[in-house]
Image (tube, rainbow, N blue to C red):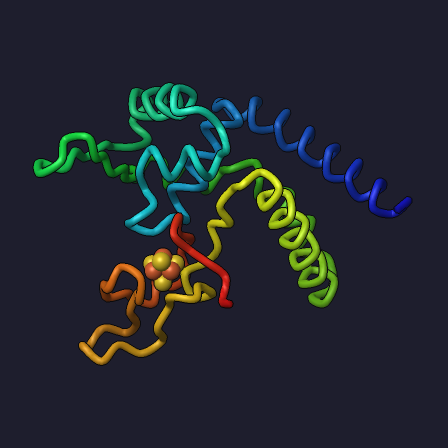
Length: 186
Ligand code: SF4
């Protein structure tokens, strides 16, 4: 219990460091989180409702965040002509350059300095804690496509892979992205 409490305090301090540095880097923490999410999310998940679920926040906050990022030239919104309520979001080149300077890289570098086994153990432990926290709140895991129960490694119709839920082809690049519909294998 003592080390569980210590870990939680360490996570809180790391989150504070990141939050302070993201403010200093010219965007609000939620705006950075939205950019990071949109850079990792697949084509079924780059929309306001999936981002709302990922951040665990309100539609109003997400709408303000997206509008601010759009004004800064960091994303474009595309409305579906067949359903004008549906909006897809794409990052711009400017956003991708901005992400190269993301202050989160300093923490990634610190983690990368650990031996490989410790890095993997840390990632596994944090993933388990996050999944439990999400389960208690009814949140979605947003796992990587390749680890989804619906992921089919081979597609008989010619694509590298296939989604068994949405019945669409998937590329190798798709298979490494996160998805709002992802579910762990049974
Ligand atoms: S296989 Fe799963 S994670 Fe991948 S696109 Fe389909 S539902 Fe999403």
